[in-house]
Amino acid sequence: MTEPRPEIWIADDDRGVRFVLAEALRDAGLTVREFGDGEEVRAALRDARPSLLLTDVRMPGEGGLALLQALHAQGVGPVIVMSAYTDVATTAAAYRAGAVDYLAKPFDLDQAVAAVQRALADVPLDAVTPVSPAPTHALLGESAAMREVFRLIGRVAASDLNVLITGETGTGKELVARALHEESARRDKPFVALNTAAIPSELLESELFGHEAGAFTGATRRHAGRFEQAEGGTLFLDEIGDMPLALQTRLLRVLAGGEFYRVGGRQLIRGNVRIIAATHQDLDTRVAAGQFRADLKHRLDVVRIELPPLRQRRSDIPLLAQHFLASAAQELKLPPKRYSKAALKVLAQRDFPGNVRELENLCRRLAVIAPGAEILPADLGSQAMASNAGGWTDALREWASQAIADGELDIHTRAREALDQTLLQAALAAHDGHRQHAAAALGVGRNTLTRKLGASRTRRPGKS
Image (tube, rainbow, N blue to C red; front, side, top):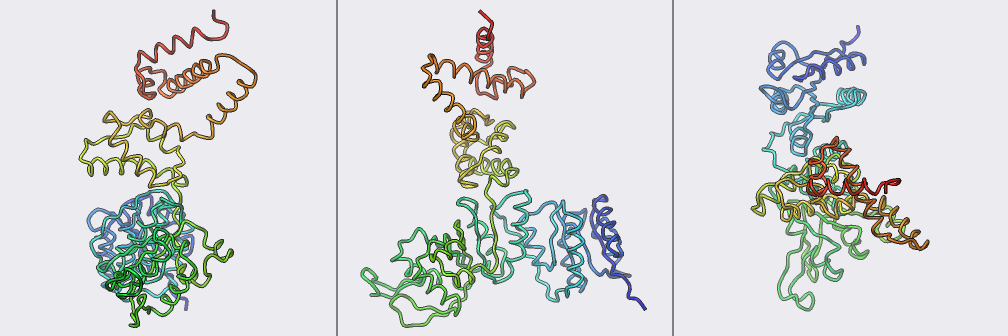
């Protein structure tokens, strides 16, 4: 006698999502029932139970997270949560409530089917953790790369595993560390951060482990180090790749045994601290060069979260820029400002070598110095020009060098005329010939634009 096929329930108020997902699961040999909201699921539970439920987070009436918690209280599961509104708080809340996986919309159907098959093979969770009020996080992003970061934070936060956060300077590694702490069971205990590159090497040991009075010159009293300060909570070690080798050895012993001595002390201290480390360096390269201990790297790199540079998630730049501009105005008690579409387009084309931190600093400057309520490309000044640095400026430099070498005359005048004409043509083309809009985009008055247009026409080749 053959066993009945698993029955999958899908709860989503979007009929299109239900349809395509249900068809994909049926093609995989599964039985599927569809529901438009949480109330329909609850009604169906009176007569049957699913092998697995896929539920959207936001639905009319009861939301997916409340439904998830209620189902686990009744022993119904496993549950996979779906949402187009992926953020740290929602993702972490879903995992805390017992979700076995989280699918960010739009998702690949093959991946969704694979997630369902994995969940069916697993044993449902018995313990249910109530959903705590979701804290707000400074991490923002809607790109696929950031959705994956949010998913990892949500999945890893509830564990006590050590985490290594990698990424370029300014990508927000400390924000990720704080989110991991705030979404963990340690959230009511201290979060202590230490930038190991900012502390002189001779003082770093004392900063980490503390010292006793008289341990060294100037140590007049006992000092609790960061490990003691973070007891029961999370210790974030930023720029771990710069830690001296001698101190790496001591840190390794602490991670292995959970015990340490203060500098100059004889009392063994046992600590209960979760370690989250971060670096902008390639630790594998430093290990190969003998600058970082391989065994310490393995202790820290239990779970890795890699933050993408801002240039690899340009679609997030407008969202971040508007958020930072509004936050700066509120913090500095300034009138609110907004970006024009053209200004946001210029920002999205920039590489931002300083990443999110550079963008935030730019927005703070604009909140103070931009003259109008709407920020235009001209307000970005050299910042806008820098977005194409290495492109037209390199070509201009080559042209100027060649012209000077050839002994040509009036180079500056000719270059300015060519620049004016190019900018005017680009602005008019972007605004369908509307002179006032083109002038605003360039940051000049309409009369100035008209005058320059007239001048450029009189200097066309063939005109006398």
